[in-house]
Amino acid sequence: MATLNYLTTTHFDYGAVSKLSSELTKASISKLFIATDTGVRAAGLVDKVTGALNADFAISIFDETPGNPTEAAVTKAFEQYTSDGCDGVLAIGGGSSMDLGKAVALLAGSGGPMAQYDPLAGGGQLVKGVAPLIAVPTTAGTGSEVSVGFVIIMNDGRKLTFASPLFIPKAAICDPELTMGLPSMMTAATGMDAITHCIEAFLAPASNPPAEGVALDGLWRGWRHIQAAVKDGTDREARWQMMMCSTEGALAFVKGLGAVHAMSHAAGRIERLNLHHGTLNAVFLPAVLRFNAPECGDKYERLLQAMGLAPGADIAEAITAMNADIGLPSGLAAMGVEEDDIPELIAYAQKDLAALSNPRRASADDFEMMVRQSL
Image (tube, rainbow, N blue to C red; front, side, top):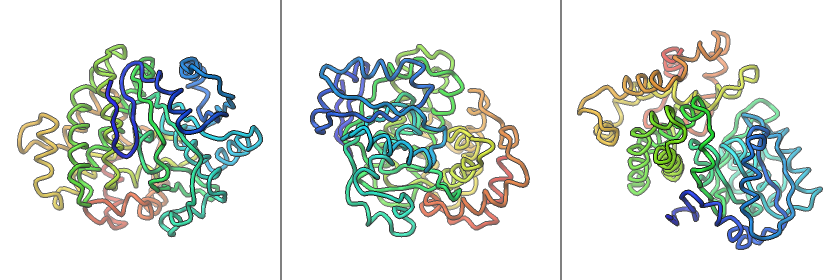
């Protein structure tokens, strides 16, 4: 079993849940607030995780996390955290549950309201502390269990990214066994989310060679195993590799993301659609790769090497073909995005934190071009 100490401690392997009790004790958590959702709980995964505890912990479970977590849900969860006298957060689920758990931990440690911590407005400096947080992913996509950020749809409609080193969980418990029952479509969507993290992190212009090495390793694993994981969800090797791709993608994006995430965050806030973030990333990625190509020098050749593609191959076309092969939607129109959605999508994408670390600065016209190419 690997124990990784890179940003945080990550216990990674089949059976890693056996490490949870010791990490909770180490974090001085005695009354757990569990952030999860109804699907994860109904699948028996919360019971599976808590059943591995070898000590007595008081437990309060909040399973009302929306697919795209909202400020209203965070407020309700924090009220439960406070009323039940909890002293730490255990997030069990995909990126939504982990992001909500991080938001609750922030409010518990620094107080509200949430909006004051918007990093684009200098809010990161106001973070005084967070409640102890441990994350247990049940999907292989977001990597939120090791990341510095989380995303919340605010009451005013903005989808904000909050970022601080303090938001990194005290420990991550990455047990691929918890992903074995993930449906093929969710495996595909979360898998492409992880692959997008690796690609965007690698291309982000900040200088961080170790993070780039982690990104390329994650891409190598994810690209070679996503088809097997989608085809056969019981393939233990493929599940292990996709979870490692997910974790490495988030370890890498400490150096930034890009226009894919800016547009995905903007589209994800369309309330009537409640679109899945990973699916959006997969759909936007080809257009953004075409747009960024003039600014990326030899980095595309290094991506092609990691993906096992021929020198000079069209990386955007390879992504499009992979999306089709694993059954993801052909474009935004197939996901319900309409012409009337485009102006607001562009406006929000321009203001998103991820847009700042795209290797090529995108104007409103550039975003419109990329959105229309993704329809």
